[in-house]
Image 1 (cartoon, rainbow, N blue to C red):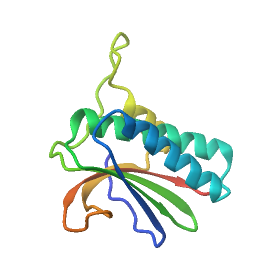
Image 2 (image 1 turned 45 degrees about the vertical axis):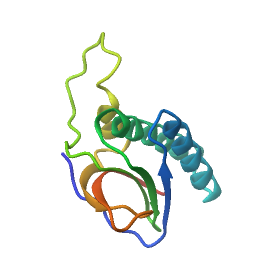
Image 3 (image 1 turned 30 degrees about the horizontal axis):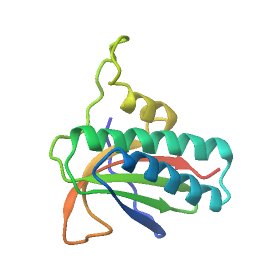
Length: 140
């Protein structure tokens, strides 16, 4: 089930390119930030994988511009990928032979169901609105 992301006070944001380089840049940004915040390695790895899935989905099914935002709260980390596409992400029944179709299943499992999609303004361009696909993880 898709839910609205909780608000947080400390926010980091990066514009992302409109090509495959966006995935690597997003992974590096999340890994560097969360490691710098002293979060456990397992949590960092999960966040990096989920970020990769959300950015890939944005590139495949959304529209530019793309943005990554991370809300670092005292109790949880919320990672958000914003794009300007209209279609909301939807889980598909994965085809065992297909190369795609498992991303949101991975996000749902690793976030214990704390993920969603909602309209959101861009952090790096506040005059623009798009859709935000997000996940949350407890800090501990």
